[in-house]
Structure formats: C-alpha cells, structure tokens
Length: 252
Image (cartoon, one colour):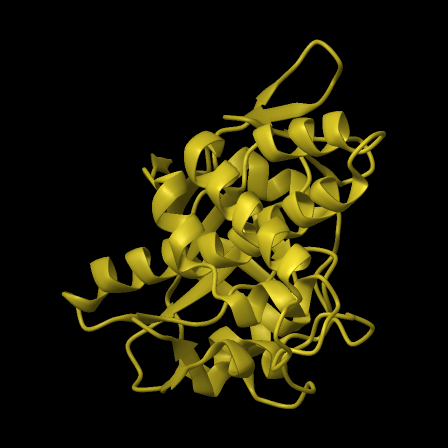
C-alpha cells in the first residue's frame, strides 16, 4: 500500500464553483446570491485551513478474468461484471485499488455548526463532498502519470455497491490496502473505518478499483465519467449514463 500526500489547500482550490453548485443542488450556470457566495467562500477557506484529505493506493496484477469476476495475484477475487467487462475489452493486465477520504474534520465541524448555523454546516458538508470527488481525480491522475512511463493508462474508477460491483467487496478492497481489524470488529485504514454495513466512516470517503491497460483509449472529462457510471438514480449527475468503460481513460 502506498500512501499519497494530497494537501487540503490544493484540493480546496481544485473544486470549481460549477461542481459545488451541482452538489448543493443548484443549476450549474447560476450566479450565487451574495449571502450564499459568502457561505461557499467560507467553506472553501475552512477546508483549505483545516481539511486533512487522505489517499492510498495499491497495484495488483490480474491473474484471470471470467464472467463477473476478476482474480488478482495473491488469490483475491473481485465480483464485478463492470470491472471484468472493462478489463476484458481493454485487455487489462492489472488494477489499482484506491481509497480516498475528505477526512473527518469537515464532518465534525458540520455537526458542530448544524444546530445554530445550518446553512454554513450544509455548505461545508457539500464542499467536503466536492473535495472527495476532486481527490478521486487527483489520486487517479497521479497513478495514471506513474503508469504512463510503461506505456500504460488507467480506466475510470469503479466502486463496490455502485452498478454491477458487489458491495461485499468493500471488505476485500480494504484488506488489499492493508486495513487492520479494530476492537469493534471493523477494518481501519488511516482515518477510514469500514462498518459492518459496508459503509465507510467518515462520510465523503470511498474505495474504488481502476483497470490498467496498454491499449490506447480516449481521455475522459468529468462528464464522461458520469456517462460511464452505472449509478442511475444519482441526483448529482453531470451527464446521462451511456459510455463504454473500456473506451474511456482518465485525463492525465
């Protein structure tokens, strides 16, 4: 497992106003009223000063791809139709397992603010969600650049519980990344804890797998990642579902 070193201020600056509007449920072309703009600016400043993002990765060779399953070197089997199809179509030979979190600080501060200043709490929570999305792209791009020296590129991230990827594989991904058991029977990795339900604590954290291929594939914009994401009920889409995962790579 390799721990990356993202900076809270760097990620806070990477969150665009357009993406924040999407996550607070407002039209992305809308101009924020003065009071709401102040809330957004305050959330950005707070996270830049206090946020402690976390990212970790591990690369694993692929031994075999079969219908709905991917066998990794070392014996771990991941149960995902989408991952298997993407690796098969792109002749992928490895995967990168990824864990990211916006960190617990924003969640703690949001809970503190909620009783008396719910608008500030809401904007901070939504900003942390935007940071988590930016962190996925940041960490994935870092790994893609590392792989480019060997003529490789990475496919988009796939997460257990999203689309055709078994939620039970959350535990397998945590174990691959070196998660250790806690006294409460959970798995812990840095600030992340995997609960018995398969959920992660703190919120705005996720586990994902990215296929590795040597094929030439098209670079992806954030809209393309939404088109390739099978979580159709998602209320925060940038674009409708419809692209082939095998033909979309991460933007470097």
